[in-house]
Length: 113
Image (cartoon, rainbow, N blue to C red; front, side, top):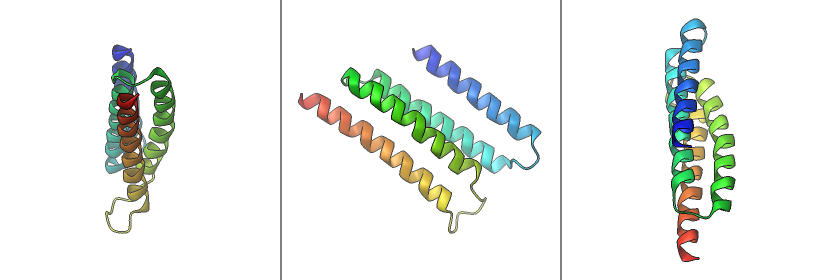
């Protein structure tokens, strides 16, 4: 499973970078941040899959993190290249914090049971 997560991450980042280099409307700022989003999603999924939490949490969290990762990816793709009044950036950071909170809460709950 470890190798599969790493291989899929590498393929998605390579595909996104390739598309970013081909399409003129896909700015480097956006595809680099989208690559970062893919990498962060993979790290969160990796930690949820290999942490010492219950199997039900692993399945649920991995599914949730895939969907939130896709949402965060689209926030990064359509984000303007300014930091002022950047709603997609705020949304992406909020999604990432939600993912970290869910993973932390599941670890705490699993340790208590």
